Length: 175
Image (cartoon, rainbow, N blue to C red; front, side):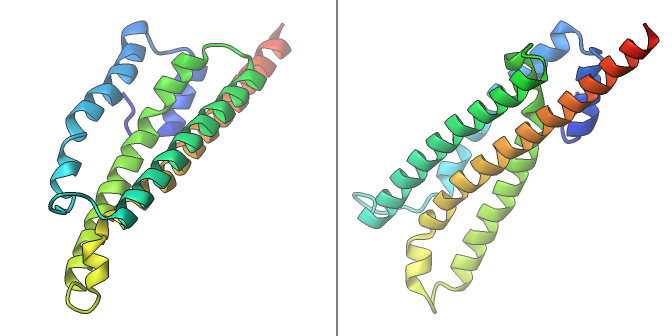
């Protein structure tokens, strides 16, 4: 399995060198990781007492709506990139090509979240608002990483398209 290298994975897909079980692993892996990592982020979420402050709640809702919109737009863009390629195996390609960007985004998110927490705690005395509303800054990572995630998948689909086109050109020249 290719966890970080999108280009190697694109080549293997273009050459049709993945068997069915390997393809299924690319589907299983994000689901398992989602189950494993969904809870730990709640451990670093600040505790508010009885309820979340309104500004934090508003930013959280806005970021959720924006992330949902970016997800819809990103999948639609990927779908059309695949459609102009050959309109074949979109779900398979999307699931497989999402794994390397997923690993990159998770790593970046963890580093940025920890960086925000460390910066906020160091500035706790000087800027109390920053520490009190650190969840706002972490919430903002959602739409940003969502946008980057779908750009990376779409770029992979575009490069796959070029590989498939080059392969077809070679086949047509030999015929």
